[in-house]
Length: 466
Image 1: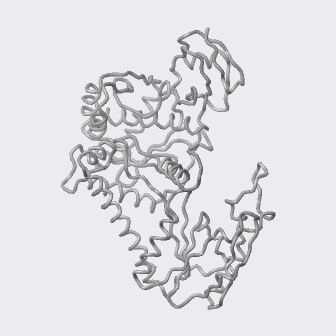
Image 2: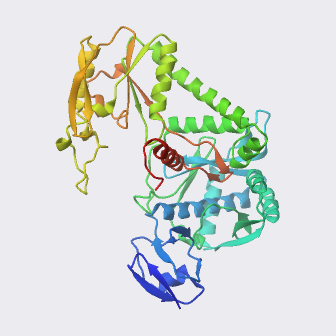
């Protein structure tokens, strides 16, 4: 017998060698709030078919866990691929990028057009309904997801036959002898994480047409097994679409083609082109501010953690200088309330990320004084004592001066509620990821920011990766 520690129970249990996680779950009678979808075995994500042969630390997870959610969505996307292949085997399914609780995708012709972008096949509403029905039929059949390790050469042939040239190219570039392949009713694909035991565990999904393609939606992590209708973020979608098409034109839509370009010595050129495109975006923003310079007095820059807010503020400031304006940066962090007035979270700790941690009234008062031509004394927040101090730093705006502030509350209208709206220009910065692993495995924007933060904090803030 093998002894394993089940974190959910807080105790060790015994099982026979070869026992699967599904069998272990059944034997201990564990019930989570939602159905168990996968498990963390010694902190590594495993599917429920994983067999136990040595002692482990095991934590069963459901949909509310981020890895449980991803296991569910991976399996859902595989069902979509199978349905599309059954109905339209001559085309390539591209899952392009993440949207609210789901993924945007397109059906494309295998060969790209002259501009480097593969032609999109637009499905009618009847065809969309047929795909949705085929997906539901596959789910109702409760078909198993099976996994095999096969020779990479065989896997590459399968991927090409399924109109997955990017996936085939990536596995060719990897240079590995063997590849793990998942099968669903004879259809083969590769994923970078485990799947569910069977299609019948996919109880809720939505599939509908959107733009030139479609949107496939899973339930929200915060409300498992319930579809939450959220408004489409069309501006964000347009940005994603622009960069996705641009990546295709450049020839680096996926990791495989990027690896190939690097191996051929084109990495410097790719970086230079990306930087040039990025700089043009900052120039466009500066041009728009300049055209409205008689009204705009304040530029607010917001974005999530490690999204590039500071870099954006510096780049925009530089482009404004090129146009003859004089950007003046004010640090939002200097407008914190004194420590004893800071709101606390549910655990009793100071919550510095809520708007209540900012002295909004004082900030608005000083900004309006500046806009009226008055001279103000800028505050400085001393984090060591948790107090606002003044050190004689005076500021008065000149005719060509324009204020720039960056922080997580930049998009919140309550931050500047006492300032005329036409004086404010708002920018949202985020490290969006247009590069994909292959046709149907995207790179999470949140994961990308996490990597940026790990590197940044490790290099400049003395924090470990953990």
